[in-house]
Image: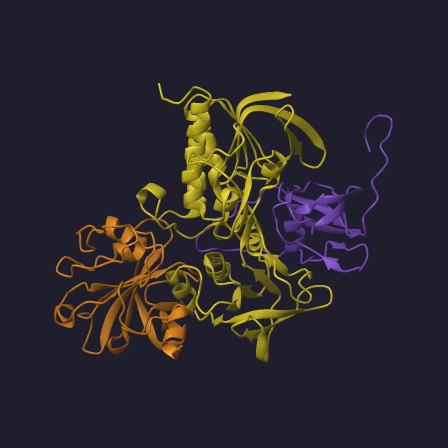
Length: 326
Length: 168
Length: 110
């Protein structure tokens, strides 16, 4: 069994930041990441980040990931595992079980844990939403921006929040046509400038519209959209779109199973998109050895995830009596 | 809701708004190298247009959510903000370019095919409709980060409509 | 394969090209990339069939969470193909139903 000062679960913007910060104070850090690569959602982001210089405004997401990994590689006291999922937390002895790939099990006993498990994509109900070709926006980004695979030829984007708008732009960059974006509200939910970027490239945004059906037998061959009224009920003419991908950008839910399992006090906060761990300003949960950071602490975005990760990292180091740099 | 409001809510600028700034005509007409237009009509936490401006033309923000304001006496039309803005919301227009009927626009571009000097392009308005043909005059990459600033000769009377190009 | 040949921002660095089988067909992909991505690049979209309603399922979340892309890989069912790296000579099969867990031999190997 591996023992460690700080275990970080999740190697996205929050986890990498937490690991770097805790390591900078001399803590022995073990980070596990379920994906094949570190960086989380950052590695799929081709757009430049907003904010100020402190949040690396003007730098593309995948570049920010490279910068974080470079920072992390400067510390000799960080061990990272990829393709490794934390499967359980055992409150009686504080052990975390992990599985590498599909069949290599091992245990880690950390003094402190930062849960930076990120988020999961939501789906909305409509007939045939199970068909291959109905993909989460993050999955579409993985295919095209990480592995260079063209997800399809023509896409319907569902949701005009920042993710829906940004991924639409990225699809065009990858040479994929975007047939349109449907948005249930009467205005785009993402930044107006992101909407303007895709509009001027000819992508229609259908406000107060939703997808009512996916067409296809074995996989998606089309989609039907329709206007909705104030009560979100479909009305009027159904419009068929000839698409092979339906990309879902209808929101995220914090990934919080391990926090539940650890017995952390959980609260439902609609603004944070679901159940999240009650935490103090240092990102410490009601469990004295567990911190939370990033989307797992409530859906926000990568810039805030990195700030939360830093705070959690410093705070774990302090709790271990290593709060100041030498 | 009015049609204008609906269009705006989907990302199309339809009229003057705070954060959507264009130069005063008298100064603009004779300003060699052009002046900047910024279309950022929503308060968002973002300030690279200000922090990257080499002449201080984008006035300092009190709060990071503030919308850009321009001191046009300081703008040199250098297009650094065009290259830096994460929202691709800055455009430079030089009305002194070419003959009476032409103008030069400096537009951000992050698509394929690669823009090449001398090539004819489709000029797109805010809704993506082709409104004119333009000619690429020069292509730069000021930040060396793959966002190109494409200088395009366009019809002068369309500088408030054209906001993108399509390389065909 | 449906690969992005040229991209305005990104440069793709693929690993070694390897051969694997999918339901008996020989396909090519890149070593270390997810099986699901390799299949998608080959135009394969259906990865399993549900146990009761026999509906097709494929790629969905790409982060190993949703179970949609479960397949039988080298005889083992319920493999999360979106986060399992491709290797030379792998046998990948469409999973029908719940799959059968292979017996473990004396040596502890399947």
